[in-house]
Amino acid sequence: MNRALFLKRAMNLLAAAVAAGLVFGADPQSLSFKPYHENGIYEVGEKAGWRVEGSGKLSYVVKKNNLTVVQSGEIDAASNGAVIETTLDEPGTLAVEVTAGSGKPARLGAAVAPSKIRPAAERPADFDAFWDGKLKALAEVPVKAVLTPVETTVPGVELYRVKLDSLGSHVQGYLAKPAREGKFPALMLYQYAGVYALKPETAVNRAAEGWLAFNVSSHDLAPTESTGVPNDYAKIGNTSRETSYFLSMYLRDKRAIDYITTRPEWDGKTIVAMGTSMGGHQSLATAALEPRVTAVIVNEPSGANTLGELHGYQTGYPNWTSKDPQVLAAAPYFDTVNLAPRIQAPVVIAIGFIDTICPPAGLWMVVNQLKVRKEVIGMIESDHNNLTPQKQGAWEKRSREVLKEILGGGE
Image 1 (cartoon, helix red, strand yellow):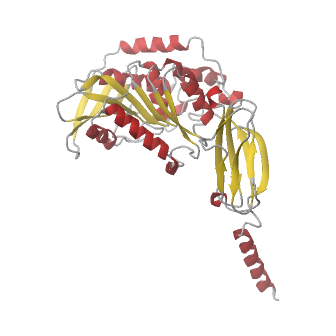
Image 2 (cartoon, one colour):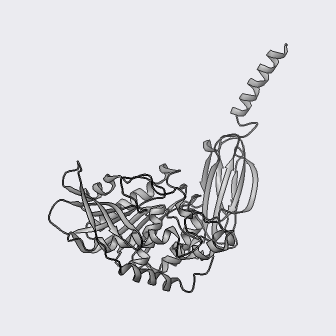
Image 3 (tube, helix red, strand yellow):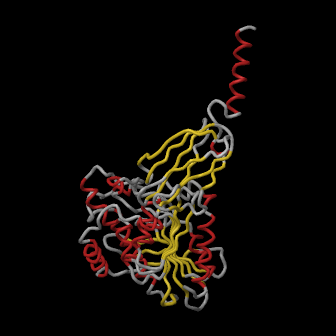
C-alpha cells in the first residue's frame, strides 16, 4: 500500500471513530440528561443528579454557586445507569458543564435548598438612609415633562416621545396610551443592558392591549438614538455610591413613576414594573424606591450579589471588579439583594438555572429577602434569555397570564 493511500484510509477510519463517539466522545447536545427532580430542586445532603442516556464517553465538571469546582469525572453514556450526581452540605446552586468531543458543551443546573440561600454580604447599615436622602433630593426637582407626538400605524393608540427632568439627568422614552376615554393601568417597561434605540412598538403594542405604557430608556438618551453613551457605562463612576452610573439610572426609573401618576388616563391604583435582565434589575430597584408600584414581573434580573466573588459565588452583570476596595464599598448600595427588603409589591421572578450572566444563587438571595408575596418561575434548562431564547417558554407563558390577570382587574 502506498503512503498516500494509507494516510487516506487512516483518516477515514479516524473520522468514522469520531462520528461514532469512540475517540473523543459523543456530541453532548445529542445526549439526554434527565434530572432526578423535575423542578431541579433538592435538599441539603440529598443526591442531586441527572440520568444520562446516549452513546460515547464524556467528561463533566460540577461547580458550586457557578464558581467552586466540587466534583469532576468521566462517564460512558452508553452504559446502563450512567449518571452525574453530587451533594451539597449547605444551601447553594449547582452548575455542571458536560464536554464530549468538539461539540458545544452541555450545561445543567440545580438548586439545593434555595429558599435558605442567604445574602453573601451584610447590607450596609446606612443603606436606607442613603436612598431616602436621594429620594428627597429627587423630589425637589420639578418633573417638567416635554411630550412630542409620534405617528404610529397601530389604530386606537397614541404615541409620544417623553423627556423629564431628574436629579442631574433626564428620563427619556416612549409613552403610549389607548386613544379613547377611560382610565388605564400603568405598565413601566425597563430595558435590558446595552446602548440602543428603543422600539416604539414595545409601548404601542401594550397600549393596544389597554395599558398606559411607558418604555423607559436606561440612559439619558433620546429613544431614537443608539449612540451617545459609552458601551462600558456600567463602570462609569463605580468607585463611589455618589457617582455610580446606576445612581442616576435608578432615580430616572423612579422619576418615570412620578410622571405616570400625573397622567389623567392612569387608573389611580395600578403600576406594574416589568423587564428582563437589566430591565428586571431596574424594575426591582424601582419597586424598592417607589411604594406606589403594585406588581413586579421580572425575567432573570441582573444586579444581584455584587460582592459574591468574595464569598464563593460567581458574580454576574454588571460585573464590577472585586479587586478595587472603592468599587466594593459602593456596589452594595445598588445590589438588588439589598434593595429587595424595601419592595412592597408582589413579585414574579423567572430564574434560569444555568444562567451565566445573572447566576441563579444571587436571584435566590433576592427572592429570600422579599417580604411580600412572590412567585418563582424556575427554568432549569435556561441560560440567559439571549443565549437560550428557546428555553424561555415558562417565563413567556406565565408573564402573559399575570399581565392579563392584572389588566382584567385582578391582583
